Image 1 (cartoon, rainbow, N blue to C red):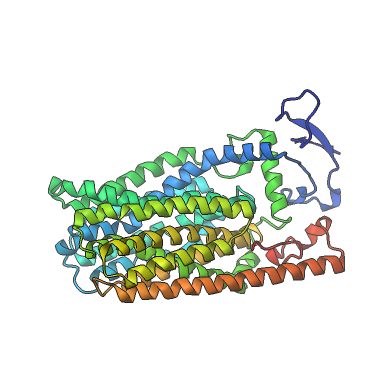
Image 2 (cartoon, one colour; image 1 turned 90 degrees about the vertical axis):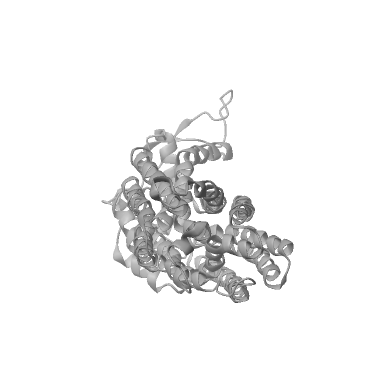
Length: 505
């Protein structure tokens, strides 16, 4: 017998509602114990009442989510501020004629896409509190030095290095969340930190509006100060996070020992006893799984509109007849709506434990927005279309990432799947960079994005049908072969192919 601190669902007579108790729980058969001791504790059953479970998760939220939200806000701000700089005069100063701006925007995504899988593997091998801040320092330095670019060629080189250094953050944060939260709790957390992308779009417009007024200070143009100041802030935040970012639940200093055991047990049960060790077989499981590529297509179908909104909103609004300064300000409301929608949809997606229907619903709203942009000749309806496009698309990106992570079984496979989905999906950013080429109506761009949104809807319907089919097949197998949780150790290396694993719809 072993003694485990347990928070019990029933309450002792006269006890405080959240009082803790100790409960004797049978230990594992000693024959199953080995060097991988963390995986061998699956039989410990710690029962939490809902209020206590929510309290522990909320405590984790307060220590993790502020950092992650600020990290991604800075990441997205530094990635797309080139759109604000373009409107602020960069095109004129660097002679960005023809496709030059499009090329400068697109080259970011080439190293960005291919560095994401290696970065997530490195995150598994190194401590998150060292790897993620190091990435931030690297791209913050590149961003700061971008204020010195004086030609089209130097801008392209700087954007290549920005893509390379920034690549690991987004998949790394998604993987990091998977190490702390059970599947049913991830969507709203991903939505909260991803909403900072929309906030970055809104804040970027306001910030650019103010920084433009620094024209001539220190011999630099206003758009150069946009790069320099935002890069300096990134480096400062990264240095601070070296000391305060947490690694894993097992080592978190802010958790008490009973809380730590409870969250580890919660994650273990959620993982269906699947392996957490590093082994290249799990990398190959991710690469060979057709479901990974279905999620990549869905993500790409949603990300092309997302990047188009981020990179070209100021330009689109400018072409509606508004001045450059007003275009910076009018680019704010669509992003604010996107941020609000992302959080609301994330909360309800977790509440109902559904992903596909929310992706389809959001994509349809965005599709309506782009139809308005395509068809309308007046500024008012077109601007409403821009707001609907952002409000519908941004929530879906967070949901599809929660969907991809939830349906990949095992720690390493999940990390590789997320990196592949984000990495290969971001190739769509190259497409986003070249489709807005026919002002002022931008029919080619809007029409292309309507096609990508339709693709995301169709593939989401297929994924829902396929996951439901696989769940029914596994349920039938468990009944026929009398497979229960007690046999979980037999399938720990199978990932989500385990008959005990169930896909989220």
